[in-house]
Length: 300
Image 1: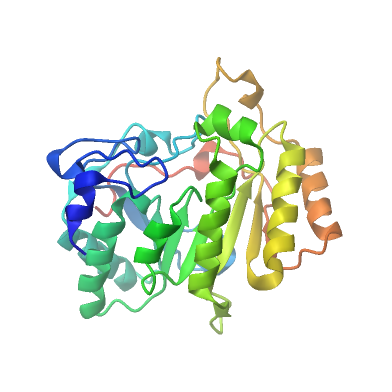
Image 2 (image 1 turned 180 degrees about the vertical axis):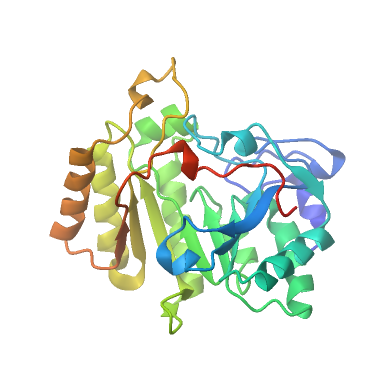
């Protein structure tokens, strides 16, 4: 794919229309250069993604969403990372496969879709055969996702908000639920089916994550209900309790606590009550800073 699409960038729903090839940066804070903060085996995804060997996770710098509570803030807004070539990204994919990765896991990749397509074209010619995971905030343009058809085996989007109020307040995108719904529809259309290998590792499919936020239990229930009523067993739903207040937030003090055990159990019980069968829940102490990787350029 020609990178000229970046001259008037509308890859994400923000549609900034900046010329990234000239070094200009839009909402995502990324220029036309490819920036990666970490590339390593990652054990903390859903079991069918990580397996025992780990998911070959590539963390890209920049983000089109920019949530105020982002646990990866140093790369999403702080832009920690290293500038690399498309050829180097293709090499990284192959190196992760050689290390035993069950898949290539692209984290926050949307604003680099053209670069990724080129890197996958190169690496596939050189022997890349493991599934490709698109790990995203869910705030994606369906038109951009269409460019990726045939390249992505597993979509792993968030569905963060149903209500406009928290979407605008915490992520500056009042239209989040409407955009995410259209994006998810396109993801499900592309994947068409769910497949696992003999060890239970997903080869094709869609897993939608929802991170429960303190004080928004009812919004979480609305999201889970919408996902189940719309897609049933066509998708898996991952209900996450790992929201972690990294530091005291003076602007949004309501975010300065974790989800309580009672709140999370209430949400899980609701999911079971409405009939969700294909799902993942988190057990134990997952809301820890230790679960956040170091973005120190490993593997880049």
